[in-house]
Length: 245
Image (tube, rainbow, N blue to C red; front, top):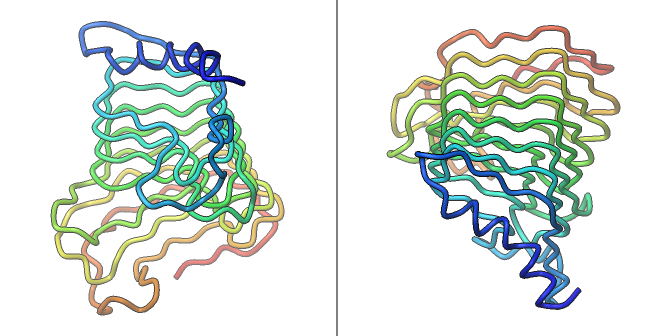
């Protein structure tokens, strides 16, 4: 695929990026593949994202494919009322930091009817998010669907209203996971979390609620200040024991 054909593929996305809150925009169709430009896939280059959507509002992204991202496939920042529908994301199981979709500082985000197979989290929900719906998503391989990690930085704000439902995870390291730092620098709630009608097959750690997330032991283990409310779990079909850390 040459430069001209790639530009045609990206054109609908450019139209999406210039959308504003006054109208409804939609972008669809096309394959994002870094190897088309001669780049090496899955290079784990910090800060590189195949698709960055910043401050997009009232929009729909559908029927796109992301292949072999060097780092995150899709990164959202400051978006509102944005829907992903029938998106396909693919990277090798051993590719580092190739999160499928990462959501940060956004609200009213819907991720629907999407297939993700990657080397890290299929979907990761970071801090300062409200009303995130993840529905009818297949995940695997990968590290599952995660909320967090939360509480590492001072400017983080609350995470409210995350619903994961009607999803299937196959051959993933984790299923659904919430992770918060024990020595969080600020105090904010992570509330209204719902995990419903989720099927997990050959998942090593189906459910993890980790309030002492401390990779490489780079923290002090103090009272957790973040996760304050009950997490609702309903109709989860798993084949391994539930793990609560």
